[in-house]
Image 1 (cartoon, protein in one colour):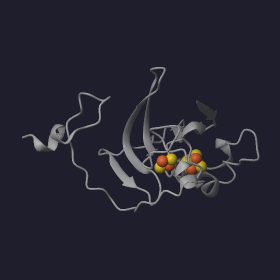
Image 2 (cartoon, protein in one colour):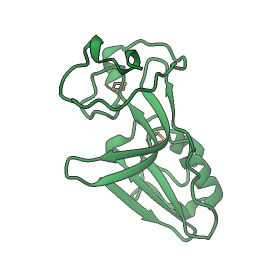
Image 3 (spheres, helix red, strand yellow):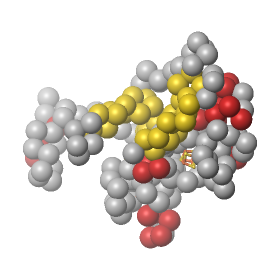
Image 4 (cartoon, protein in one colour):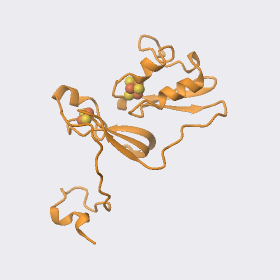
Length: 166
Ligand code: SF4
Ligand code: FES
């Protein structure tokens, strides 16, 4: 559930369900984001520009902002990139459309998706990889583009692999 914290120049929103608690926000703007205070996010406790910069570093997309001072909103990357984080999730940046069980659709500029297979909140990472000691390199993937699969409920057999078709 996304909560909104409205300031004078910038509005901050936060969805605890997808936060992976790496603390970029707490380190980057400690006066704005403080876990020991309620509300924990006070957009006016920092310069709007600095708050926006820190929010763009939030890997999970849990934090987002909306400028209220007429300055540009977050620019979404034109291409979507997927970067494996060492021993952790896939960091996706671009335009990520998430459809929730109740049918609501949210578009995220950044997301951290589970690649260890153990998250209880898939497709998002919920830090289970830390508990299970998941190990995987942080090197970039070579991604093969393929047509959308028609039968999502079945595992893909080798013969169905779209890369084999011409
Ligand atoms: S994922 Fe985002 S909101 Fe959560 S701690 Fe990291 S920077 Fe803050
Ligand atoms: S990669 Fe984080 S829970 Fe799977």
